[in-house]
Length: 524
Image (cartoon, rainbow, N blue to C red; front, side, top):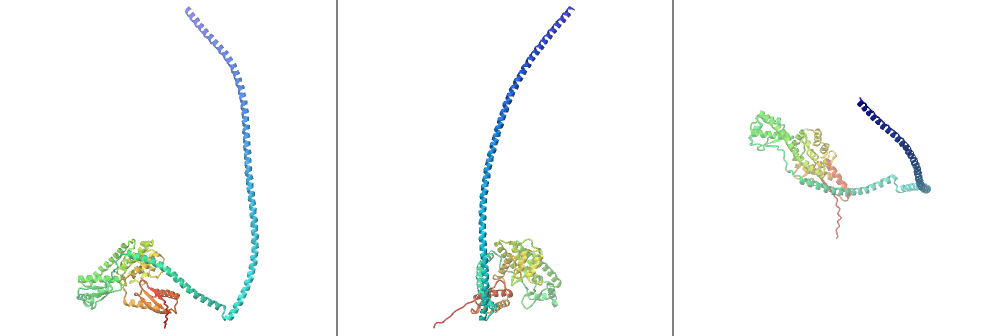
């Protein structure tokens, strides 16, 4: 019990000590806090004082800075104002100078206007004076003309006509001389270029000049074959002529039969059929019909083949197949002995060469040259000239307008509208006129020569006329007393026009009018 009491007392004592210590600590803390509070208040007062002092210093500094900034701004504004005033003063000075210049110019214009008015007034006076003088002169001229009419016995109109006639006569001489000079110059230049171009085209053209002609005579192994062809009572020959559409001439010519027909295609079919029958030996109506049908088919195939080969050699694609057949038919057509297809290919080659040298479309030029005589493939079947028929065929198969115009104009029937058309005409004349290209019957040749000389002699003042160089040139001798140099030039031009209109001829014809005056005296 005492132990518990002592323990309790000890505990209480310990607690009392603890509480005492706590109380003492609290008291000490209270005292410390009181002392720190007083010190803090004093420090806060000191801080406030220092802050006030600093604030006063800052306010004073800010006021000074503001005054300084305001001063600087005011100073800058004053400077800008002074500069602006200087600029305004300079502009005012410029405007003043410009105004002075305008006033000076205005004064000068006013002065010029015054001078012009004075001149106008003087001119008006002069015009009035001239009008009066002209009126007086007109009156004097009328009086003089009346006096001249009385003296000359000729009216003014008659005198005018007389003067105009003399002027016309004089001017015609000058015009003719001018035309001659111009023609000479143009001829020298154009002829030199044309000769060079044609010579170059001929040199570059390498086609064989020999031509194939249509055969119209069939050779027989013996005269006995003539009787077999005629047949009993003429039965075989009647069937042949009916099937072939030709005339068979069986005369005294040994071992030969002549095939006569205006259609070269039918004539070729007849030639082939007769050769087949002669070789086969079986000549009877049934066999004749079978052979004729076979030969007709062969000729149709060969015409297309000839046309196709021509187009291939010339490098001309996309030509209508029917038109190709018409081209091939030219192989059996001749003109003055010249093969039609060979001639057309010649013209195509020459036209293409010349077009290439001139920078034109070579294929189009060759196409126009090949088709220029296409009408000759049907002119023995249809009515119309080969030019008209050729143009119709070209239009039918959709050919180019340049090609159509070249066909229409290559003989001068229609005006040429392109350079290629002129080249086709030149190549056509070149192909037809070269030596050996064409033959002509003696009767036609003599008739053409006589016609040329007759045309030349029909002109007044012609003394003699001669057709030279196989009709390629006409030389005309004129009477010098009746024909002047200028009239000789006109006469040559008129002869050329009549020859072009009235004469049919291949190539070109040169007209030379010669005027020679000789003064001959004999000293005794």
